Length: 274
Image (cartoon, rainbow, N blue to C red; front, side, top):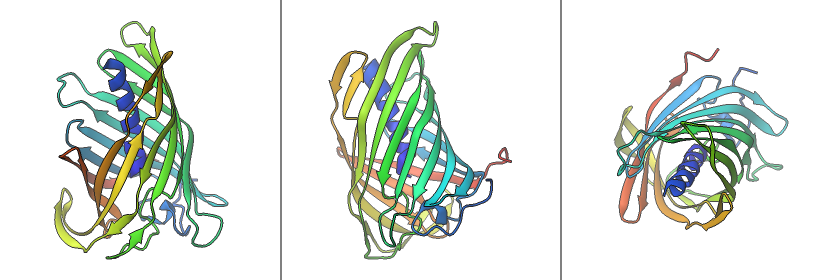
């Protein structure tokens, strides 16, 4: 589940710097389309702790088969805030048309992409609107992969671009623009450990720790006419993949001596999706 966190994180980081067919698509090997939860109306909720607590809700709509894989609409609603600031959270809505490609040949690495996704966000004094696109090697999920102890899964890369406007919430006047043409996330080799019984928000589950290094970067950031050189972030991550849900129910992120946690708090169907 890297792509929603990347996109939420990139936009939040940019704002922080400025202020400082309705049936399941099945049978596509090696892509997210294999997951049992990949169906119209499937809904997942996650809660992240730490210096930037975040609540995320993702809903899949209209998954369908394509010539090379499958596609689906993905809506993401998130609330996040810097823990040190006592103001209201940043509320963000994103809508993505996701395309998953299984690869040209058997055993080849698949890809994921989203072009010109819409982003709407609102903070205490400003609102943000714009578009994001990304393209990645690997499908940024464990669906279709052989998850067993001792396996080393290949790394993945994702490149993204953001083009955003920030306007005054009170007057709707333009405050500035934000462009990040070469944002990226890179995931190193992922090592699967021995299954353990852990306590999750959804109850005790038998889950497998998958550890790796992740690097994220906004790249050169254009704030209006000003060029800002941003520093990449390096994290050591453990995903707790739980086969009974075919989902990561807990993620632990270690960065600069701190440990932050992302818990999946609900998986189910959205009653509002027809």
